[in-house]
Length: 116
Image (cartoon, rainbow, N blue to C red; front, side):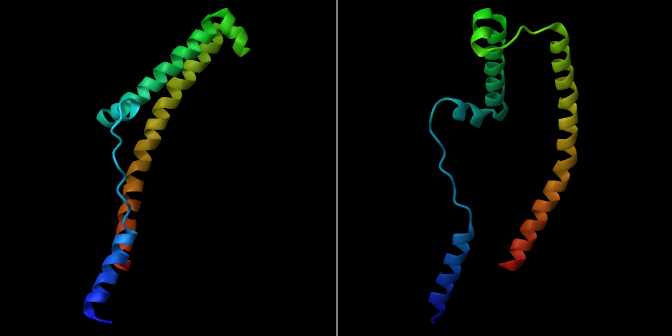
C-alpha cells in the first residue's frame, strides 16, 4: 500500500469518528427564541402551561370537562411550598454535579486522544 493511500485511509477513519455538524434551523418561533436566550423558551412554555391549567381550574365548565375538583387553599399552599423547597435543592444538586461532570468529560477526552 502506498503512503498516499494509507494517509487517505487514516484521514477517512478520523473524520468518520467526528460528530456530524447539525444544520441550524432558520425558522421563526421557539427555536429562534431559544437560540437568542435559552431560558426564554422555557419560561414561555411554563407560562403557557400555568395559564392553561389556571383557566381550567378557574372556569367551572372547563373544570367539569377536565374532571377536576375545586382547588382549596391548603392544597395551593402545599403545592407552592413543595415548589419553593424543590427549586433550591435542584439548584444545589446541579452545582454539586457540574464540577464532577466536567472532570469526567476531560477524562473521556484525554482517553479518546490517547487511543487515536
